[in-house]
Image (cartoon, rainbow, N blue to C red; front, side, top):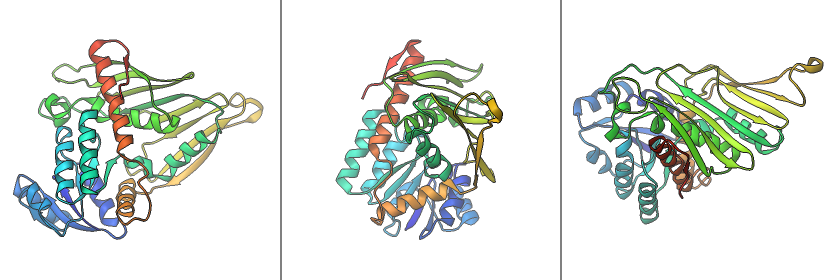
Length: 334
């Protein structure tokens, strides 16, 4: 599989090493609207420099592309890549509306090519272990998922993360993970979202969002995502009627090890009971997602996550934005 990269975005510093290590993968090169940036990326990582996005898509030797463009460009260039005969790994969010996800889905059907939304954490052993434990009933009935993702971003109106027209704001950025993780752990879809937000002085978009996704049957997901404070010890926790799981560390910032901490059966520390800890050595999640899409293309396995999943996640994020704007709960519209 020969891969091209559509843009020289900073996230390439995380994705490209995984792509280079992925089995059966070759880096074709980088495209940029600023040719000198493509040349610098090719000099750093290998492959060739393409003077435009179109030039890369026109190369018949490229089988798949990674798209880390600004959020508002994801759907358009995913469709253009599909129509050029390429398979696509697109950074989250795949699109800024359910309607645009449907446009991508029709392009997939029309071209026979595959698209994977780039939630790399889902491919890691620790995350899959957590999902398996919850689904197997290790915690009894799961009642609450807590997701907190944050990192401090300096005030800068020119930062693409803050540009409203480009799909800026913390909800489209880290909120994608909150929705995706809650849905994945419960194995269900929320019906309603309540969200409050804060806008840091000098920024045009929300920089912190806090809220609740309601899944029904006593199941809720509490989330906080922010550009205003650092990550907590555990970004993800699951609480059930018979125990809890905590996942300290992100698992995608190259920590040498990550942990899954679990407690079940009675009150903590009663009768000497302490949580159990499973340790997971680092595995590059970006490499795993590239290898997963390679396997899909080669017919080795079906996609673990299809565009129906991307559509459902986008619907939750649209509801989150509506709730923030209306200052009231918003139904998830599908």
